[in-house]
Structures are given as C-alpha cells and as structure tokens.
Length: 252
Image (cartoon, rainbow, N blue to C red; front, side, top):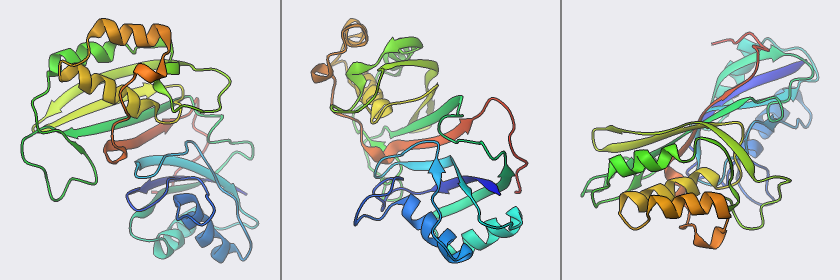
C-alpha cells in the first residue's frame, strides 16, 4: 500500500525537511511516528527538501506501508503522535508508482515581508521584517523579469549539485496586504535557496539599490557573486505541489 500525505509544518525549530545526522528534521519526526505505528522502519519521500526555518502548508510526501491501514485512521494516528508544529492535513492511498518529487508538475511558494517601522512580536517567525519603505511598483516590475525559462545560475547556493540551472517560472508577482508584501512564485522546480535569492534581489530593487538592468544581467550572466545574500528563511512557505492528474482520493 503506497500512501500519499499532505503535510503542514512550522519549520522554525527544525533543520529542514531532509534527514541529517544528529539534527532534528521534519522527515525524522514523521518517520519516527510511522515506525511506531507499523513496528518497523519506514522511509518517506517528499516533493521538496525545504531548508532550516522554512515552512510548509502543502508539502507532499509518500511512503510504502507494510500493511493496510485506513487512510483516515492513519491521519488521526499521525496527528495524535506528531508534535503540534507538524500536521498531516490529508492522507490517501495512491498509485504504487507515485513519486512526489519526480512526478510534480508545479511547485508553489510564497514569501512574506512585514514592511513597517515596528517589528512584530508574533510574526517574526513567519515574515522578514523590513522597516524602510519599499518601492512595490519596481518590485512588481522586477518580478516579471523572472517569468519564462531562464538560467538561474546566479540564484542558487554555491556548490549546489544539479545537472542544469535552467528553470521555468509560470507565476511571479507581488501584492500588498496591509503591512505585508506577499510574493507568489510558481515553477516547475527550484534549486536550493533559489526563491530566497530571487526575493533578496527584488528587495534590493525595492530599496533602489539594484537596477532592473542589473537584474537582467544576473539572469543572462549567471554570476552568483553579484547576487545579494539570500532573504531570511522565516518568510518562505511551500504552499502547494501540483501533479498532472489526481492520483489519490484525499481523506480530509
């Protein structure tokens, strides 16, 4: 029985999704509970390896269960045993060949900025606080430059192992919601720190420290050393992962 999970988590106190020796990760927590439920080690795969401090509302993961367990009961059991900052939103039996990473067609991320003079005691885990005013019009224009297929070599962590740095972006847009600036980006896939590096560059445009032509050059030239340091992890959320067709019936 192959099971598909949709997982929500607050990544603040974890070292990201992926298993790491002697570190507390989301994957380690979920696998520990699954091992208790099934009485043997269980390995789970995810659609994306979110970094330390990054959150998710719609992480998709899958594993092979050694015996049948009603998905609704499985979800209840997982949520009863997981810590409060990790929640299984959906559980469903899925196709035996379902691969949450390779099968994903679109990944949707959101980045949140609290753009006001006074910081928030409640939101510091979930938004990048920037006190000075930002030029939203310029940031929207810069976001449009990322649309389409580009070489994102300048927007990845140095040393990232990948066969190609070309990626396609379908949606790239900013909106204001009160004191918040919200960036939404949808793409086929993303490299490590790619969204946070894109956000950092657009913020520099909004601060009038980086021109649009310079941003175009970064997309054309791929010089990582010229890209601003990545935006803080706290503002980044994996919102949703979409697949070409419905492979499972969800149990909400």
